[in-house]
Each structure stands twice: as C-alpha cells, then as structure tokens.
Length: 196
Length: 165
Image (cartoon, rainbow over all chains, first blue to last red; front, side, top):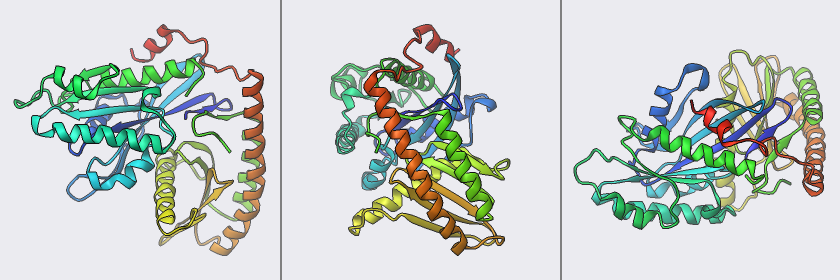
C-alpha cells in the first residue's frame, strides 16, 4: 500500500527483504546504504541483538528522484530471518508494496530457503495479500561460496512463477542493485496500472 | 477505514486541516514536537522543533513500536493498546492511535505534563478522526467516479529507467 501525497507531491513505497536466517538481508541493505549518495539516503536503523542478528527489523529510507514531478521514496525493511521471530515478521509485512526474497545458495541451506518461502506466503496470506499479485523478485545470494546449489535447481524449487531473479554476492555488492532496481521498477509499473 | 490493498492518498486540503489541528495541539499542550504517522511507518506531517530530528526514522520506529505493542495486545486478548507513554530524563514521548489507523506522537519536556498532553490529545484526536474520515470518503468517491487518476498512469518505461541512472 503506497502512500501518495498530493500535498507534498511525494510517493512512498515499502519494500521488504525476506529470507532465512543469515541469508544476507541486512548485508543487502548495508551495501545499498554504503553505495548510495548521501543526499539520496536517510539513516539506516538496525534493531539487532548483541551478536548482530536482526531482532526486529533494519530500515533504510531511499529517495530515488522524481517522476512526473513526484518525489519517489522507497523504504527498505528487512525481517528477522530466524524461525522463532515469526510474530515480528508478520508485523513488518504490513503495508508492503514489494518483496525481495533473498535465498542462501549454500547446499545446507536449501531446506531453510524453502521453509522461509512457505512462511512468506503464509504470512502474506494472513495479511490479505497474495505473493503472485505482489511485485516480487528473488535473489540467489552467496554465489561466491564453493558449496552452492546450482541456479537451475534453486530456480526450480523457489521460482515456479518465473519472477525476475538475480545471482548475487551481497558482501561485494554484485547483484544487489540489480535486485533493488527490479523490485522498484515492478512497484512503479504496478502503480502505473493503478494497483498498489 | 482504508482497504489493506488500496493506496493511502493525501490531498492539500486535508493536509492543511491536519496541520492546523496539530499546530494547535502543539501550542495548547506546550509540547516540543508533534508528528503524525501512518501505521505502515510513513510520515504524514510534523510540526514543532523538528530541525534536529530524524523524522523519517522516528516515523518508522514509532510504527514498529505500535505494531509490536499491538501484537502484545492481541496475545492477551486486547484489540490494541491505544496509548503508549515513554518517560525519559528530559523528554517524554506520548503515542496514541487515532481513528484506528494513524499514529499521533507528542514529544514534550518539563514545560508540559502527561496530564495536560493526554487531555489535549484526546480533543485533537477527535478532530483528526473527522478529517481522516473525510479523507477516506473523498478517496473512495474519487475511486468510484474513476477520477482518481494515478499520477503514475502516464509514466513510461523511460521515466522509470531514468530514476536508476
């Protein structure tokens, strides 16, 4: 649900990064933060535990520029990936305009990816959303590691609807902006159609 | 009052009315800063000593706070906790839910008191609720008439691509 403000000529959209624990959601946001010009970003907030695990969410506001005289702002959120934080994940999905699913490409995390994807669908449905109808992209992260599942297999398991998907290495930044651009574009196209 | 799937729209006229209410509340409650946030964390309006405040972050954290306490409320069988109060050494934050949809945040120090803030907030909340009701009606009417032309209806792929250059 985007917020269209005719008074200040702004449009605000919410993007949520979802995925299993330690898949690199926070790293994605940190990289976007590092590589964005100071005037285009706000402060990044991380509500994390002492061991740097996300406790509630990370938040990063971005101002992308103007379209037809409207300032476009994107609010990027991550959810806590650990299974037992499910109550918090549900809260963060409220009012979402677009979702990025960050998959951990490592073989041993294959089950965790599938479980998290199911969890995403369940939690969205609880809020009255359908994943198929939302702007949605998938990122296969950690492609630089040696023990990764092939993209073809990940695609087969996680992307049956053939949404835009990207290989990435969030620590070096590879694929991070491609992912963000893709979801932002889908959201804007959705707004164009008058949905949202 | 707003469908979960439709967009939240704000118009000039309503924003002016909202600003008038919160500016009056700022004066009458002797508070420092007042802001209004949508439950999803989008800042609607802010007034008072906002120059040194990161209002975007405040808005997002406030919404997170309300969402978390709302979750707690449901667990014990309450619908929601409509008022939250955080007491600091100098500044305090009073957070309340208006019309079940928007969050009103009042930051105040020793120049005011919790009692005064609560009293003034109650009155302002009723006025704000009326405005948001009007806004919901207006948005619904516009949608029905099909006059709610999205400002994005005519954007091109090039417009979108230009954002990412």
